[in-house]
Image (cartoon, rainbow, N blue to C red):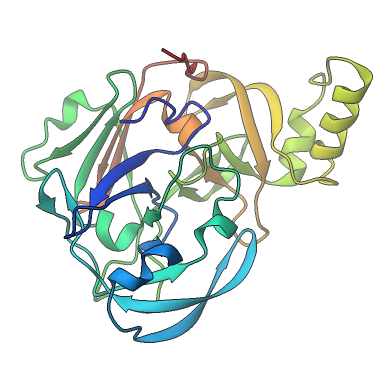
Length: 280
């Protein structure tokens, strides 16, 4: 696992094309499929067509190509039949890591992945023989599996209150969100009381973010989620149709096990506060 994962950075794995070229890719449970940067298009053969994708930064016209072999550690990953080729810089414009693609749910849904942020390891586990009692609390996952609804986006969700409380609702679990997550704007405003600190300029920026006047995550003292206490959280305002999301910075405070074949997520809290990024 890259050292910045869950510490303000994305979770990145390096895959290799058949010609040996290394392709660093973000592991993104919030992405329905695999996306590759347009610089890789000449290696993918003839374009099959075009489509439009919608993200938090807007719409983009993209190409559709047959999926190439994408080995991880010499083992080809299971993927869908097609990949999207896009201008990746439009989607992840301020990445300090030179990523070349996004590894989405059409691949990840086939596997049982354990994210151990303290050990810095990603483990592929046998979903038929899990020691589930050692993995923490189990959360049933909702996702549209291949064959059930081919037009639906495969995006894992749990039925739970959001990070800032409220009623039980659908909460998206998104490893492609490198903050703690997202919440309803009203919940952010209610939890921001007393969190204004620093000099006048910092207080003004914080106020504008809380009120939704600028696109910026809001730093809050903490929250209580599923009975556990967490400090120093960063959340943004979620979209109206799905405002509650859990992101990578929050997940990194746990041992995380995604058993996608059995539609279960396990969380075992290992840290109250966010993990610090220490350069070597």
